[in-house]
Image (cartoon, rainbow over all chains, first blue to last red; front, top):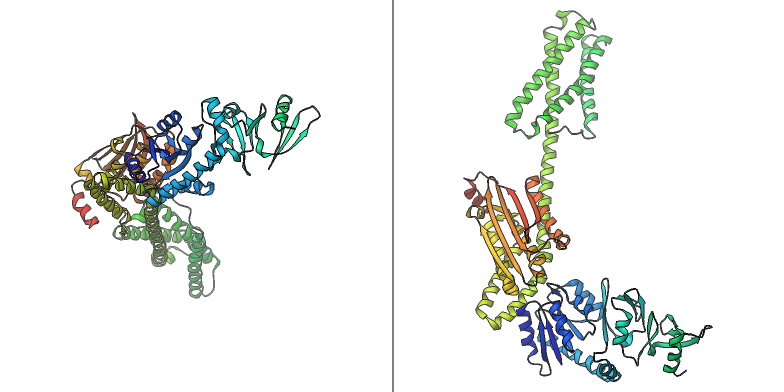
Length: 245
Length: 362
């Protein structure tokens, strides 16, 4: 498991290194002292787990997650931050409190291993994207909407809808905005699962509940949990093939 | 001092009191003259029931504009006695003259000197009682206001302690410090020991249940040094500290935790936001009859101003309660630094403050 440590305090980083030593499967791929360093480090090579401090000189750990195209498994580390801890708890983000108890770290690592194993079994089809586009497929998105934040599995997202420079992300009962264009998202999404139905929407094919023919020859797709999305005429033909209608 | 609008009970009390006195005098006159004469009654009503309250109201205005309420009893009594005598004599003379010349209520010999003297002593008695009541009410009010101010001070100090634990010497600082010390235990055990001691000293200083509102700047600076030593472990080369406090300033008194609050702000909103770190410079001087303490940190004011506002307005509130309008706290940019400056009046003339300081702190 490749791990990156992000913390602005040298002693906090060396303490984490020491705590990680007994875990034989963990390799420390790098350390970063701030958001900028972490971002360039993470752009260089894919990693499995990010141990991420919240307060840093040039921004917060959340700012970093928002900037990343591909978000690895994340465990937030903090000394004490009532607001952040509240956010983690309602959004099921894993976190460790400093000073970090070795048992809690072991738990967090075990959880990350389970998540990674599940992803690699589910994500076989993603290898196609990895090879064809020589970049890493998007499997998790960090989304922040005011006080709330989510680390969403892409598979749970049923629709991306363009809204200016933003994309509205539909999952569960939530539909927050992220600062990413549909073009950028499309390039990173697994084509076996996600389909661009028009200039303004990408749908999750696994979330399709029903398809109706429109009078103009196009299609309207109903998604589980809503909404119904109009498919352009050109893309309707391709979608029929894709769904073998 | 400006003349305040009297409180609601003031005029009823004025006219009630003089009214009773007027009734008493009318009754005496009626008995003496065997029946009530209109002219006498008019004279009593005009010169006692109407002129009495008005005269005292004028006296009140005079006393307020001349700050009699702040006088010690020794300086107040002769002034009060003189004004009572003067006003009584004047009013008695006016009463006599008006009765003879205007009301034609008897000749000069009926009124002077004996009757007028009687009237003057009646006035003097009434005015003395008036003043006695007035000053008792006022001193009671002042006492209550003082008590209220003391209570407010106590509550605010209490609050400051709580807020200090909650937001300034905040849990974030505490747990980060513990995390750093945990790493130091392996890297540099001797330094870890020193840090634990410093952390203990600092905790004792902030948790101290002793309700002293002010401490010597020396004590405060020592707590600040503990605090910064711990932060230096966290920030390492990112934090440089310069402390330059005049010996004369060290003996002065400051509200407990005031400088510490400013330094914590400087770290939280200054140093911790700078990737390359910066400097905190603490200075204190005695200039004339004022103590000036400044805490400067690298950085810009900008976005930090709103969040720093809580700690600062807190400190300002305490300064206001302790020193009134004579102390000030400002936050301003100054060439790449953000400088918080506190200025407080010195309580004693410079020659005596050392011993006085010790007395109060003992």
